[in-house]
Amino acid sequence: MDEINELITPVQMRFATESDFTTLEIIFITQERFVIWNLSPDFEGWYAGKASQDDVAAMILINSELRGTTRKGVILHEMTHALGLYGHSDKYSDGVLSYKWDTITEFSDRDRECIRFLYHPSITVGMTEDEVRSLIHHLP
Image 1 (cartoon, rainbow, N blue to C red):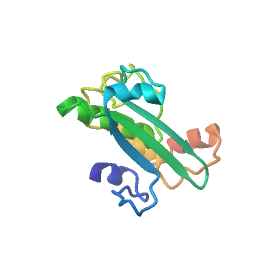
Image 2: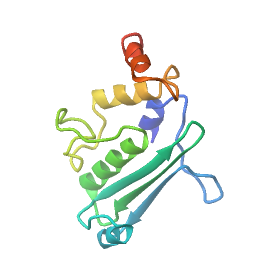
Image 3: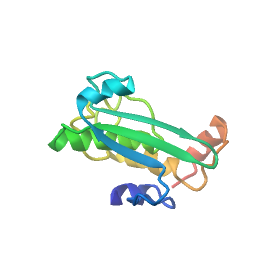
């Protein structure tokens, strides 16, 4: 979590108590229970979320039977979706959103830059694609 917090400044992620309002929930379930959520029983992890200008809510399901590197990789992959990076790619095989999600347990330099950019104070809700593209070349 510390590494994520370094990347998403000024936003900060923290563990919440039951009395806290949470916007991200991580639920560990057995693989068979993915079917209850209308998901493939082959899934190792799943993310769903919605965002508006004022609110973000997300849920991550993780196969509770995963262990070691696979578990860490799946959690990191789904957390990255929750941070706002969607989709998957084979273009960058070292990236956490590649299809090697079960073996990548750390952010690549490209992952870190994407997350920093997404959370940069100059990036605001409602910006057009052209506005965002023009910032890419001017941010440190």
